[in-house]
Length: 107
Image (tube, rainbow, N blue to C red):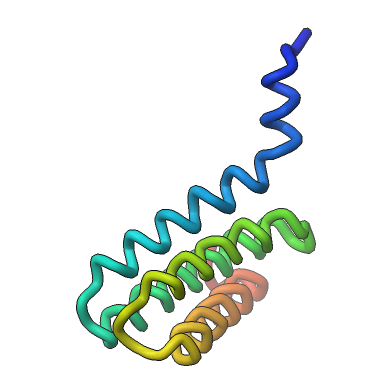
């Protein structure tokens, strides 16, 4: 199976592409939320989803970078709420999800 040069470029740059895509998605989602409480709930849910994603991919640095893009985009666009609380909610959501999936309580 032969691949052209553009196919190889995509395989080499997929982390950067998904980093930027999730950065933009996080930014747009955070701008559209007009409440600090809902901003914290949404970032907690994003953290919960990323915990599952990272638990499946275990110890693969590119996936951590992709998730970091989502977090950075969300924090850049958030006008309501503190960035420290947003970061804390994301870490708590990721940790809880990671633990629950690791122990087999969730599939």
